[in-house]
Image 1 (tube, helix red, strand yellow):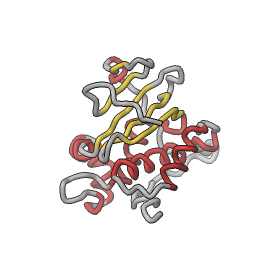
Image 2 (tube, helix red, strand yellow; image 1 turned 90 degrees about the vertical axis):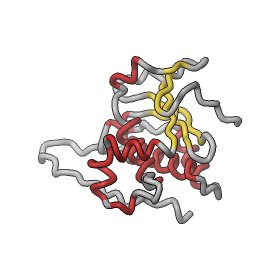
Image 3 (cartoon, rainbow, N blue to C red; image 1 turned 120 degrees about the vertical axis):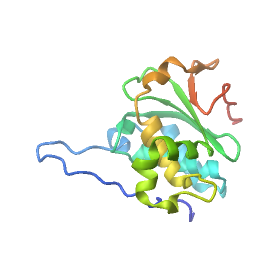
Image 4 (spheres, one colour; image 1 turned 180 degrees about the vertical axis):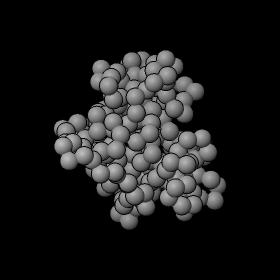
Length: 184
């Protein structure tokens, strides 16, 4: 599919000292779950061109390939789209493998990330072509940023404000209430 390509986010990695071991991806560490692989296959094979589907694919693909943050330690247990402009990922966060956390991100969150955090470090440093006319980040860049800077980082203060669902999953992100589970 033409949209299944990396955006123009280029990874800049400084040279590691000669004695340092190479960083391994989640795939190489054996952290990628069967569900994670299945989800990537389903998202890649469908004709769906919705923003939410494409951004979710980019997020899951980055979690599979990442060596930049602690994303290589994350284990994805489920993910789905929540309409045309949002997606949800249920995962075990870095350094808390016993915790089940859900993150919901909406297309409108990309504006917030550009202005309040990722703007200077990710989007703006790679040019304005990764921001559309409404101020939303490029969907692939946004999915990659969610994987690296939301899911791939420890929960920190968010751990105290998680909204628990009936399955014990603690939700954060773009949530006013527990997101609906997919019909499968």
